[in-house]
Image (cartoon, rainbow, N blue to C red; front, side, top):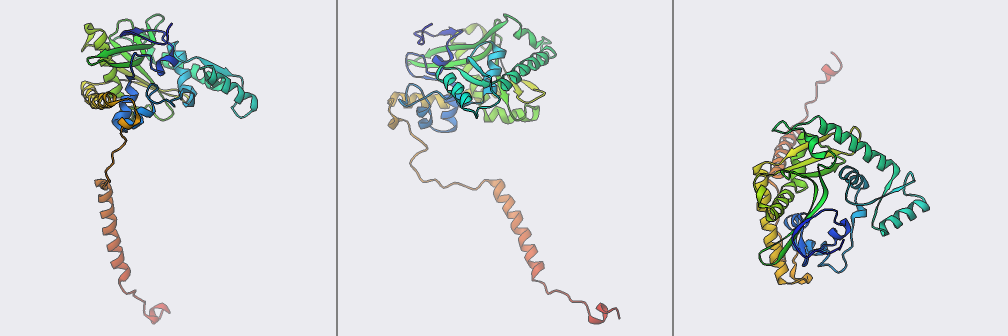
Length: 325
């Protein structure tokens, strides 16, 4: 399979390394780069884009191996693993194994981590077997043998010749649900999901997926669900499954539109770093957040009251009282 594409479409089994190197005819935008544009600046996007920054290097090996291993085992696709027969990476042989794996484009992982990833996968499938969606359909149906495609690349172009790409974690054959798989060393509890949704850019990522799928297949436009599976990497590997609401999707679409506008503006200006600004050239005058000011005012009041108390003369008991008599 070629490492380049020439037409929009669905690309199963596309080499992950080639995907991250950007196989589109012109530099393309991804969900992670769009989130970076929204959260940081165009200059950050330029620095992290494989087709814009001449010094760009892939950084997949720097990520925690458990997530990569879990994806590979659960999805039966994605990054190729290199399981190391070592307890840690401290020995000379272990380091040599790791470096060789990275040079070969593989993800080095310790045996203990690989075993945990397998346990995570078993726990994940057990959970899914006990869960049903709002239509009373078992979630495990989407994950049975031959039910879908893992690590599915979609690529599309829009008016003006702008290209986009997205790597979908799991796409069932029926196409009505799109799964995004997340792992966390923290909590996947229901009360923590809203924070993760914001911090990890779930809304914008789902909006990007929606935009690409609608471009490639209008038949299911407006009828797809965008679903997140978030699982903890520590035993007992508990998970939650979330469907994004229409309100979530609306926010994601608006955020994506803002990021995309800036992306097109910079791309049209040119590929050089000088056309991709940072945070601006104005001196900032940051304001203290309201909650900090409120907390300080409370402490100031307490301080003044305490000072008044300390300023009052100390009452010394009478001598006869002290002596008891």
